[in-house]
Length: 427
Ligand SMILES: [Zn+2]
Image 1: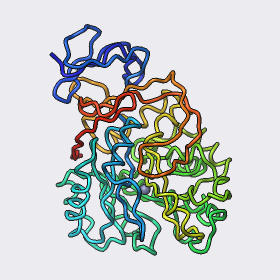
Image 2 (image 1 turned 120 degrees about the vertical axis):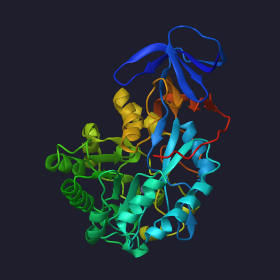
Image 3 (image 1 turned 45 degrees about the horizontal axis):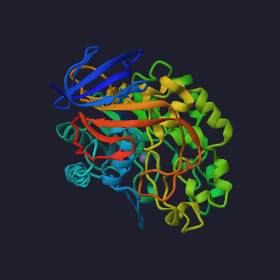
């Protein structure tokens, strides 16, 4: 007898769908068969698709930013993520400046994440790092962390890491994640939302991305560029490093860069759309869409704040940066790109970040599954985030998450939330 059977769905196996049944035992996918077996619980997925649970490799729950704290903690953040079909998220440690700080920084975040309803791991984040990069790598590996995040900007908050140190942080067995904006090309102060895009121009992103890609190629190491906001950055990486893309240079983008342009920033509520890097002009947005094939992963950089907090100050640099996104990420991107988007939410992030038991529907893998009804039309009204607004409100999209299953446990079904118990995943 199986614990759970998902019956009659069109099950996604990478290159094709097959109508079959997926059976779960003790949190794992135990059998995939057209035969009917006895199960304690059955979910009928007739006319729906069954895909691996989604992985969001870039979220910020319970993040303190100056006087503000992001609206979602791990409990509400993982809940709204589960409504979006996400079964694993990767968050970050607070920035550390010396290798001695790593263990405490990781323990702190693990403790904060204990009540997450889906699985999780963390990237180690460094600021203006002055410790021993090799010792840090050893400590990370010992704790099951195989990715380190660096910033090429934000020296005002002591987070900018020098290129000399970045060079040493690269490692053949780990993935270096980089926030790419060339600090010297940014204007930082006294910009209104309307001029914010020009203050953090595409050129700054492109320049830092090329710089990082050159180092990665020289070091023969793995680079992951987070939240690429512009098509021209992608095209430039393709021009200069065609052989590395998807093999040792990995590229991430987020739904907002595919849906929203900087026009939003000129509106009276422009503050609500402030995030880093900024929303771009329409041409960059269209170029990003047409270069989707170069993108390895879609993440959200989920970091919403309450609208009152976003609107509190007039100058862009005073506004807490970030928006929400986990709940609508997959349906939004599926609407634009169909099946081609699925690996960017599943097998690709699993492969890049070493989530060995995730990202695929295969016997022996974790039973992280999503039932998705692509026939339902749906207007985005709200989300289950604690934030009081979503930038996608009013968008009409096709498709809805019917159920989210984490290691065999139904976390959400037909809009009803059942909770769950996430685990820290060693990578
Ligand atoms: Zn981020």
